[in-house]
Length: 132
Image 1: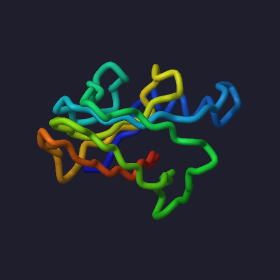
Image 2: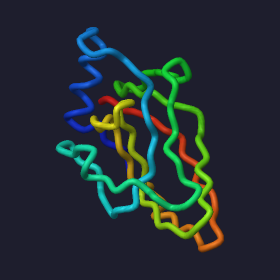
Image 3: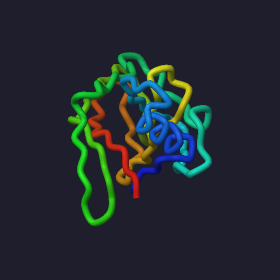
């Protein structure tokens, strides 16, 4: 499934673009509730993973790649690996601002959910933000 840049994320990205809001690094998180991203979503709609070994990842601004293909603009980031040390069911990922108060983007795994066994395991995510 293609991800969603929700309304609040579009507004935040526009504010950053016109220098009304100060840009900062973004935060990548995994979510564990069975949620399909939607335009009206906010941060509180996603249940962040709490499994042992999990920690959110900071996405440094300078490391994004931005391109436009067939009328769709997309920013992508290098693949990130989350290493969990206990069982978890993870449905997708979401990206917030650095204060973790604004939802920038969310995507449900098209081949998920990922069921991590009791001994732990890795989840690899290539974060992106899409505007179309």
